[in-house]
Length: 372
Image (cartoon, rainbow, N blue to C red; front, side, top):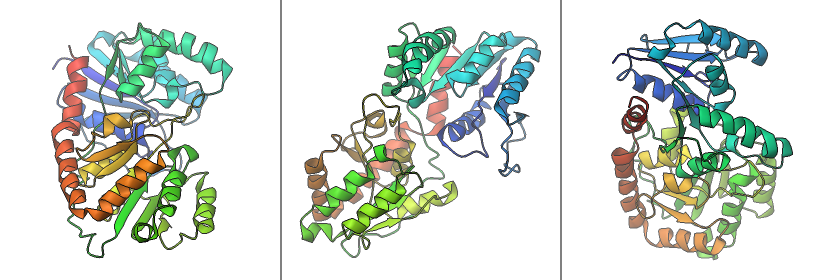
């Protein structure tokens, strides 16, 4: 080891969220590959500042306000001597990778997650921000590390000249693990879901599908929904309208440390996210699918976005077509009729994670590409 690593990401613990958690796992994994690991981030106002960082990871925080933050980060990066001895991995192509390149670093890498590579309905993003600005940055960095084959495709669509490497995400399989809770003694099928409550997450589709099942199947399903978001009131109204208050339950936000228990209380995890043209709402990968599988809970998802990289059909989970009620109905009735199938698929789910999706495996791939 003769190089140092700077992880430059505004999203980093104690901030919650997928990018923050990903960068944190990479920082710890990097200790086996680099002489020194530095995290460059911004101060998180109002959050717990006692978050533990390993003593051999140096954490540098800029001021929290965006304009000051970017100036502080630029000044710090400009001040780094012997830049050729550093790799710098950025949480996003903008502004982190832009600032890193502007600061004079040669070995700049950026993560890609999905939504930041979509223009939605914004003409500015469609005709300038992505093809011109993003295209330039993605070509200049050494490699674009995409969280799924879908996200890699989005980056390649912006510019064919980018060096894009798809490395599907992983999960902390020591934290997310089976707890051997017996859920099937009363013959019910307990489904759960964890996500922001947004319309494109398609909780309404799942609820409608359950509501339209034959009574002898419908009454044997419970649906536990964790998360907060702007679509929650509409979802709660739908449950009341369909008279399903005794079957659908809302839990609000669940802290990371409590999620393994939440998953383990269920028989299967479900999130059938929609992909709609001309929006930037998409599941770039879906880490929650891995978290559930790591707990030995089989998963159900839609063939949209990067979800097919998180679910292998009949090997820990099932994929259905977007908003296909007939397909989901058949699957739910099959699981109710064959509870042994849930157990068998849960064992496969855990094995799949241990074989393909641990953070050790992810870091081996990531730093294998970066340290070539």
